[in-house]
Amino acid sequence: MLKNIWLLGVLGLIACSTTPSKPQASNDAPLTMPEEVVVSTKKVLGLEDRIWQLVELPRSVNVGKIQDGAFINFEDASMNVKGSTGCNRLMGSYKRHENILRLNDIASTKIFCPSGGIVQEALFIDALNDTRAWRIDGTHLYLMDDKNTVLAVFEVQ
Image (spheres, rainbow, N blue to C red):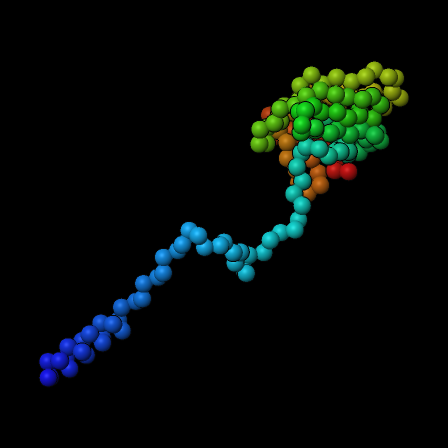
């Protein structure tokens, strides 16, 4: 009888000292979002299908003076770029992979521009032709060359 009590005591200690096994996860269990995760409501801007108003051409002598009406739009469905230099319409195509961007066949109409407009137009088209990378920071789009030098700055409209 003493042996039976001793055996029950040992079994009781063993039972108390083992950790219960975790239940196995079922693949059929519904996924739920933990309460501690905060979902951001901030809209992330993309490159395509929006109007980007030109606000700065760093290569320009008059960096702070951009002629009104200069903008660009990257059309996702056609991979075409359209816009205005501030005087003339511009068009072309583009290829993009992650932060790499290459604009091709940039052309513009040739309507007379006031003196400052023709300079801005030439610098704008040069910036587009030299673009090799892009970045969006907040509401601004930065077009950059192969050394990450900013060529043009736009603001979403």
